[in-house]
Every structure is written in C-alpha cells, then in structure tokens.
Image 1 (tube, helix red, strand yellow):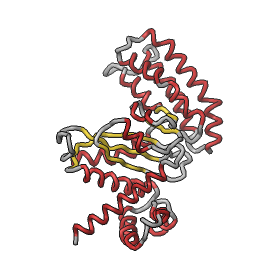
Image 2 (cartoon, rainbow, N blue to C red):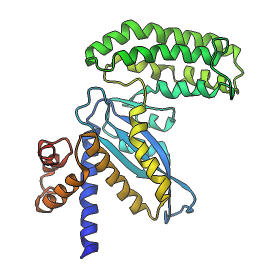
Image 3 (cartoon, rainbow, N blue to C red):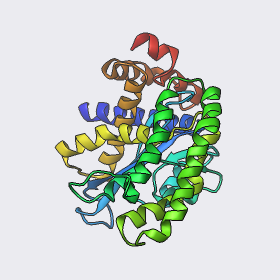
Length: 302
C-alpha cells in the first residue's frame, strides 16, 4: 500500500511539472542554467560519469508567473535544451554555454555578470583591479552599467527600456569600442585575452537586454534558482537511478515554485495529494491550472 501511494504521488508530481513546462514556454523571457549530478544505474554510462540537472525559470521582470523548473538529463548536449524549448520563440537569458543555440526561433540575451566574472578572474591573485590594467578597465565600465540597473530595479518595464536606451546603450557601445581596441593588446590565450574574445564573440547577445525592459542584465535568477539543488547535492551526493533523478527534478520544481509564489510547500503538497486523485485531469488538462502555485485556489489554501 505504501509503495502504491508513493508511486501515485510521483505520478502527480510529474504531471504537474509537465504542465509547468507548458506554462513556462509561454513566457517571453525565461532564464536557463545547468549543473552536474552523479546518477547511478544510467544505461550505457559509468556511475562516476556526469549527468546534468537543467534549470529553467521565468524572468523577475514582468513575467506572467513565477516558475522554477528543473529537468534531469543524462548529458549536456544542446539537443536537450532544444527539446525543452520546442515551441518557444522569445528571448532566453543564459550564460556562455553554446548548447542553448540549437533552437533557431530563440533570441539570446547574454549574462553581463558572467562576462564580468571573466575579467575578475583575469586579475592575478592578491592584486586589485586597477585602471592601469585591462581587466580593471573592463570591470569599471561594466560596473557603471550595473549601477544604473540598480537604480531601475523598481521601474516599470517601459520606463526601464527607455532609460536603458538613453543611459546604458552609450555605455555598452563604449565598452565594446574599448574591447575591440584592446584585443591587439592582450595575449589571445591569456585570461584577459579570453575575456575580451568572449565579449566580442557574443557581442550581439550582450545588446539584447537593451531592447526589452523585461530582460534581465544578468542570469542571476537562474543561478539563484539552481542554488538549492547545488547545496542539497553536497548532502545527498548522488541519485541512485535516472528515475530517482527525474523524480527529484519534479519535486524541486514544485517546491521552488511554491517558494517563489509565497506558498507553504507542505500545505501545497497536502492540497494536491488530497484533491488530485478525484480530478479527471487526464481528460481535462485545463484542470491542472488550478494546481499551479500561482492559481487563486492554491494562493487561498496554501
């Protein structure tokens, strides 16, 4: 009996996570990130081989719903992102990983915080960023842009876009003019050379956020969303099977989305496990909308 209850619970969790995915790709500006996970009993792979937990979430700036969705995959191929994003035609905020480039209908927004880290890592140990060094110059220019973004944090979407065009675009233009002129001064295979080359190679994606006030300047939302999983991984270390990893992904999706929508996860799970067995949601999928964390029913009861 206990095993049957557990199996039924996992089924409901999986159904809800699948419905969340449908709602997420309806968003215009989701974020994406991924991290490794060790999974045993993966067919055709050794136990020590890396698998991956992918995380997709809605934008903190003007999203319809707050959605945090985890997806287990046995690798890091772009085909996995392509499959997940099938049907999506908006803007994806992501880091440098080229695997997100597979879906041709998707427009990409680069993460300025990720780019800044490249320049920070180019500073030798025990040395400070200084205006005499290329890394220090880059960091100072990027920090000017971030300072304006902090001012615009609470601005309306339209006002944020207007201010970005007026105040930030000249700074972005100046940064890339600097990067282009500095390429010849940096050794290509050095850390500073790699940082400048990364900026120039992904230049188009770093301009994307300027055109839409709903697009974040960084991918911090996805990085923060995936952090609970990364912290938890330090304790449980691995998943014993692919099915277990997939079940974990569904549970993390429901719990983190609950938290993002201000719900008590325990009350939410109690509600869905009490009500869903009596719902013909396989015949009427629209009923699943009532079980999303942002629905009025869940907001009133959880």
